Amino acid sequence: MAFQGTLVIDTEKCKGCGVCIQGCPNKVIALSKKVNHKGYNYLEMVNESACIGCANCAVVCPDGVIEVYRAKI
Image (cartoon, rainbow, N blue to C red; front, side, top):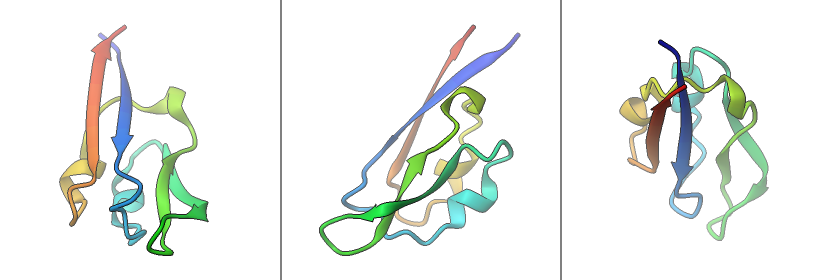
């Protein structure tokens, strides 16, 4: 059974530490070239179709700014 995941990222609270990027097995996320109101490059999905909803990114995020949803496909 396959799963498709999606992320909801609180870009205004993300401080761009990059810990979540190392935890993603499918290279789905990266730091944006844009910045939030605090001046941090925030997280964004760059390869949405590769997300399996494993939630590794959310588990390792020190600030809890990532929510993961997954659905059976």
